[in-house]
Length: 204
Image 1 (cartoon, rainbow, N blue to C red):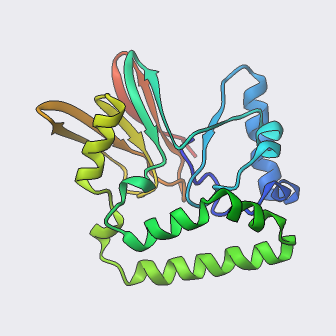
Image 2 (image 1 turned 90 degrees about the vertical axis):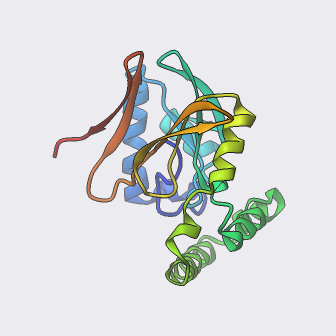
Image 3 (image 1 turned 180 degrees about the vertical axis):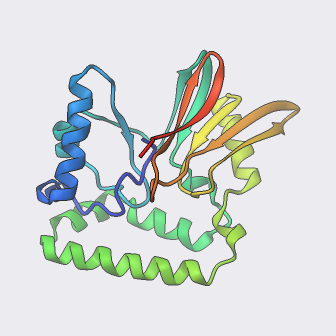
């Protein structure tokens, strides 16, 4: 899971809330069957911590990671760092991801953190309404540089909520970029093996 599993995560005390507890229990049940569970932080749930990992049996992933998927080295990312045209967001991201600032945030009383999260959501919605859609999508140059830095030909990310499979060339080499959807109303994921990449959707 490449981030934004939760709309917001205010600290691992959230595990006491029914919805979060239910998600954690489901992941733990899956992990107990022997399926490796890995979760990457998103821009909404970047405060997922050790207690969450222990409760779910999941391993927390770094911001970007190259894995072998179907025999192809594949770069996994949340995707928000690719949206470099959204300067305001990148400035906010650098501010909120500062470790000392996160420690201060987690030291606040739980009701204060809930209020802060509600304020951030309102601020984010207002900011998004005033932005061109293109600004909130990935930057082609940032995508190309991510491919170069990782030395791979395949990338999978989320964040933009614009599910698609893009086939491009970077430095004369074919590359593929697969974008995950959100899970609002349906559950869709990517299945990757030696035969390629396929989208799967959970039947209701």
